[in-house]
Length: 308
Image 1 (cartoon, rainbow, N blue to C red):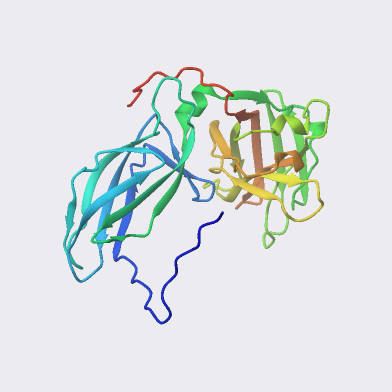
Image 2 (image 1 turned 135 degrees about the vertical axis):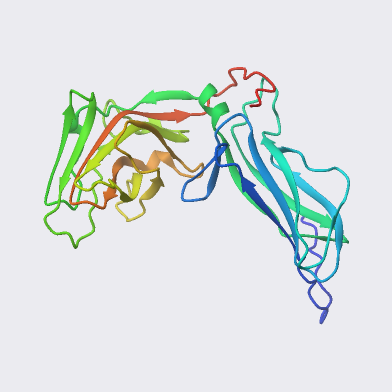
């Protein structure tokens, strides 16, 4: 049986929201914000952060910061006192890690949830989705996509002239684009079908990341881009493609990851598109070592307390 939901009596005023607000300040070297600012990637086994507790009410508050979804060392167990509006926040230096840090743990993702409880009320919750990158990379299964053959890639760009070739000197795929009209949106996203003998759709099942190396050059010194993405193209023929953001390529070979949301039906993905929107009118992108990464079915035995 579903229990009845207790509501407010007729005419009763709704309770005022708590004036206490929590904020986190992440150590830049320990975190990377990904998926268009929807995911905090913990780059090491742990990550340093500050937790700030602000009181925007007119009266002082006393209570504790409650935590769920992750371990957060550095928060006091005893109640903290918050001055009224205009007072500085309570601030704590903390170290974030997974809830289960045992050597058999396979926890690679979670959602950190924080709230303030005191004076008979609870603040709004701060929720931050997490990926524990080092744990994931230590244990994940890797599968190479057959990316090397340019004949497998469908040319797909707004360029006046474009090409997809294999660059033997770089041992990489090369995407070239040139635009005569500087007023149009410049983009290049060659498409790799997955329904081939070497790239079966089933191979994406359970994938959490695309991993690859990229570099670029343009006809402008800044070599800058509006955006760079891996796109998931679905089999229903609708404009429901999903864009997986990654940091745009530079003039040097660099490793990149594109995060795949857990709620995606990867069995419906018929192709991926890989590329960027350059700011210049001539652009070359190089791509190599394109892999999909999946969580291992069992932990490979991460050592406990691998904190940095």
